[in-house]
Image 1 (spheres, rainbow, N blue to C red):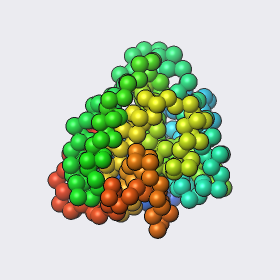
Image 2 (image 1 turned 135 degrees about the horizontal axis):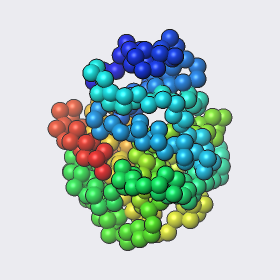
Image 3 (image 1 turned 45 degrees about the vertical axis):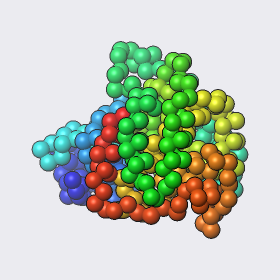
Image 4 (image 1 turned 180 degrees about the vertical axis):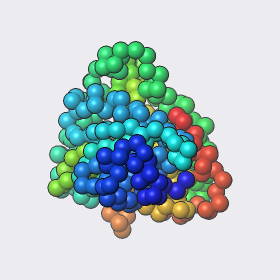
Length: 333
């Protein structure tokens, strides 16, 4: 649905009139799951785009205040939880505005040790935070994260959908290696669940905040290693892995999580969102380059495997019927 300033203003007037007179500014580029408006100088309004993101606002409202004291980087501060109305059917939130710009590899290249240390410190702190039942007694089924194998069907379908764009035999080999890796056999730990460069903010050349905890849950920490392929490179990944102390099986599963996310994103939006297409193509190229051990650099300075292994991406047809189905299945897991 289209989430206009008029709609947002009406929601604020009805539910939080103390903020209804503040200026609204739509943030671009918009995320795939939410629309975000800056509200005045110090607030933001975050609204789901569709059913698959419903429930994320309530999750953040419940858990972020409990997790924040344990984390070394700033996270969103929920201030109010909006409820559905006849005109807008999902929960939404008002949070404290966080300054910064989305993380890009080029912006952090000059401080690789600092960047990898910050990432590892954040994940280590998150993973060692007391589990949900200790922070808030009681069962919390909404925090249970599915294992990597739950994405098998959707990921294989996404790989088939990009045949002719990428070397699907290589992608399938990487995916099957990840599925064959020993599973996480310890207690579930806190996971961000969508830990990629777009959900990091930077200020003055360093990571300043982590945002979008809609995928927050308890499970296999390998899912948060996606960041190794969306932000880092062949040079900085070993620094990050060493700082975090990741074993071989967890790293292999993490590669699978990154592949699943990257190929699904590319298949879903390559034809309509060039920015996301470029990001997911880089992500897949980094994965394949690591797998093949080739670090030849493209004219854009991105590590890429040999052209025989991964083609430079071409958009999928905009009529691709696979896209929405893939997105929904991925979000459900």
